Image (cartoon, rainbow, N blue to C red; front, side, top):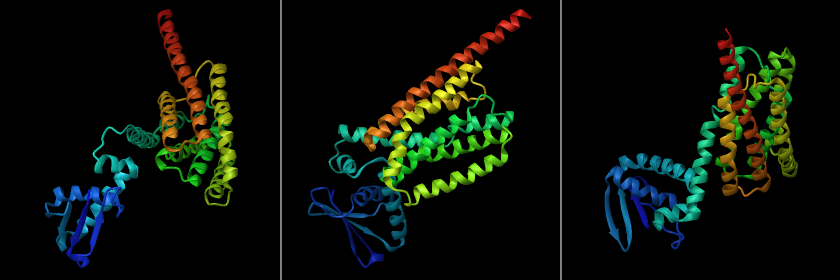
Length: 309
């Protein structure tokens, strides 16, 4: 793909995009040119294997904005190499690019789902004005694990699609921790905890904390995730019910962590992150199984009581 742009508003300056063998310009410009040809219906002329696109002055702003938008969206889904494979070489069956693109799509889907994953849990606590059955220490450990993962990934420069859900999960987990403390009668403690957490989070992500310290915190996540989830599982077992735990949240966490194993392998290759998500998936599976078990047990108990009456 060799495309040169000539437009009146830049004194006929040229923007050129070539394939990997040409080594010239930004590939995303070449891709968006194809869209512009259709969208703007501009005059096009072929010259020595390339394409010259004449852009009238009144359409310059539209073309520039579209270039930026499509280039941004393309890089959310494809790596530079895969953009070339798909749109320059028309190789739509490249296995490596299929895995990479699938990973990015899953990652973005998980991020989208993370906006609401713990909202049912928060709403359930607010509706009942109770945090019964929720182990606050388990929630705090979960919050530490999420925060350590986000800080480590951010400082390490991993793609946002591989860890972005942690941002929204962290906010929601923080809300749950504060609500649990509040409805347990410790409002002052909840306020102090919130202020302290935000201060620590700033220090961890502002460059003031060594990456080695963040890596150590990330490595600690493996036992922490297991302990936090298994503590909640033990609380459920001791109470003989899952209390105020939300079934929707439980199952979304399980499937989200399961998908994260694949995205972590594809996008980061970081062993500690991969192991953390494997452990998280196993622990979330236990919680999800308990939700199903006690859900069915409660239903049978209610049926038995109705028959007795």
